[in-house]
Image 1 (cartoon, helix red, strand yellow):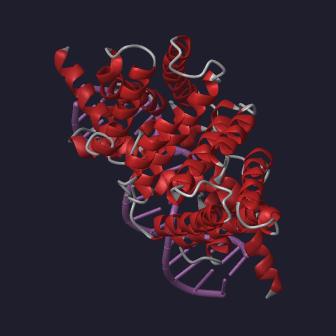
Image 2 (cartoon, protein in one colour):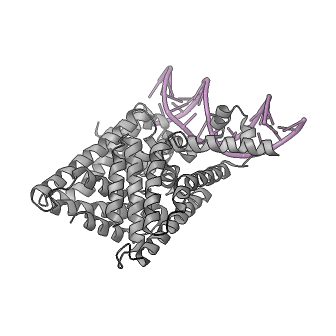
Image 3 (spheres, each protein chain N blue to C red):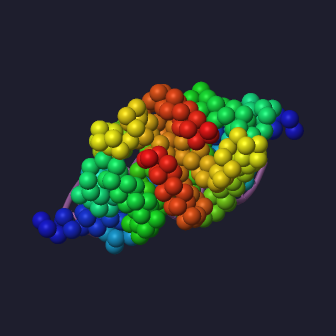
Length: 194
Length: 194
DNA sequence: CCTACCGATCGGTAGG
DNA sequence: CCTACCGATCGGTAGG
């Protein structure tokens, strides 16, 4: 039924925002229910267990990330031009999507929260981050092939450092509310991609 | 009494390890009590409230960090030499202190966990991270003064990027169990500090 | 999708 | 430091 689908979407939108602040463990069924005017049974019925709710929330966040960070850059020329567009969109996503992710990037939150636990949630976080890195690595490789980056450039090294820059930016924005860090991230990317 | 002090130390050692894995919110009084063979009252008596237990746990983690990362570098020549020694010790701390911090750096965990909440825990995390950054900034400034780093170097930029490198290393070690990232962090530091 | 309920665990208190 | 207890909330189930 279309109504059930719509309810599921509402639950996930609320779940992404809640998990961004409280973590995927702090994403409780009771709180979701209260916030949406549903019963706990009504929430849980769409997912079966809390773990599956957590995985569904992560996947929805990945769809949003793709839409907000990848889509604006996708049609740029592969290689350095697209990498730069991705970095721009990535920074914009961290700064501007306070409504969707009031507690900052959900992948930063979830990767820290589950990095020492076993289970389906941890596996899903790791998988989604790997997919993203493959995408970045591809454009780094193209940039090297095109001579836009030095021939000896270590692809994984660039991806590692890019990841660090945006983890640092997320922390600076969320914990210190320091928007000047956007400029720092931009400069760090420039230094890395030239 | 010396015994009470000893019990408090035992609670905090266990608390640091537990919070490293489960977060400072997942650090529950009941679980601490069970793990230490105490009653809940026995645990809480040393701190009063859970929030104060969380702050005490963070402070203990900061003492450990100082001992493991700052102390080995402290007597190096201020400036670039000491910065390099700090980076070495910082990486070693993330890789080797699995027993003390089985879930990785507690400051990485706590900063993500509390970056969207108000209260004493958030303030303490932010304060401790600021103290550490001041320390790093000082040696960057000395290095510039000594001509070891270019005259136009932006101090906060270097600190920002250093922080990113070690956040990325922590994630790579914990979520992906990728020890090759240590070499990547080392290379990123070299690139930054030359 | 609902109400009504389950056992477990949470932070915290009282009294000793 | 203990036992015994409080109300609230957790994930989840039953029956409709």
